[in-house]
Amino acid sequence: MQQRTDHSQPTDAQVEVAITAFRMLCDATRLRLLWALSHGEHDVGNLAAAVGAARPAVSQHLAKLRLAGLVACRREGRRVLYRARDSHIRALIAEAVHHADHEVSHIPRHE
Image (cartoon, rainbow, N blue to C red):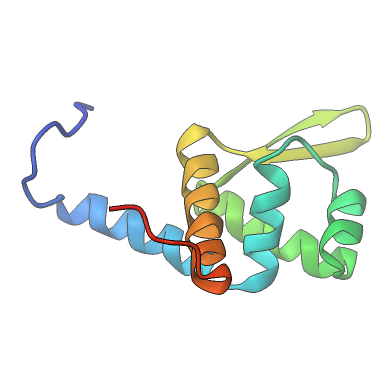
């Protein structure tokens, strides 16, 4: 697929994928999970402790994030390790949190 280099409107397919990603981010637990996964691989137990949620709930959130294409995983023995799928997801999460930091800390906005 060719990368967009102009300012034309995104295709319907691109809009749908973006909407799906943003839907996944509108849940506090999923955003916290993606923040952790943006900084390295983690298993369900570590993620549950990091975000303060029960393991079954974390597993369900991870399944949704995987289906949405935001999270990837790999098996290491009996453990499954999760990570943010790619640099685009890591950048999206970082920008969302940095935007929030500017809003709550009253840091001047970048133009």
